[in-house]
Image 1 (spheres, rainbow, N blue to C red):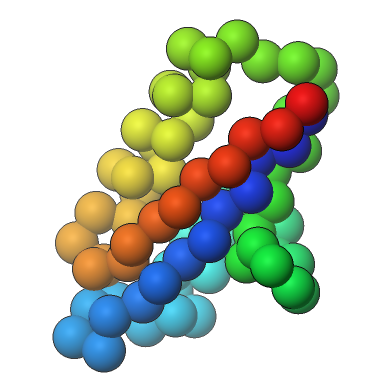
Image 2: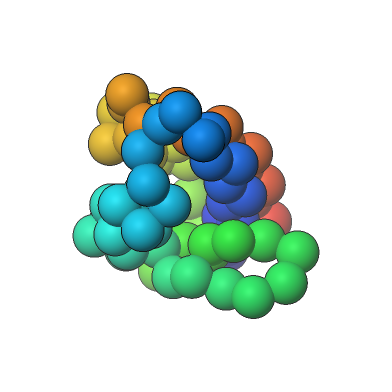
Length: 74
């Protein structure tokens, strides 16, 4: 199972390099192509687990001005 994250950064917000570092610290891997980052789950996760993960990402990036789009597939 994978959760893909697309990130839009604001010119008035946090630097893209700082946002990237924070996501990598959380276990996301940078990618090239349609998505900016991917999180590889060890097993299939319940919707509640995915939502908790999204909440943690939002908290980690609070104040950066980043706009996020999440997509999870099995």
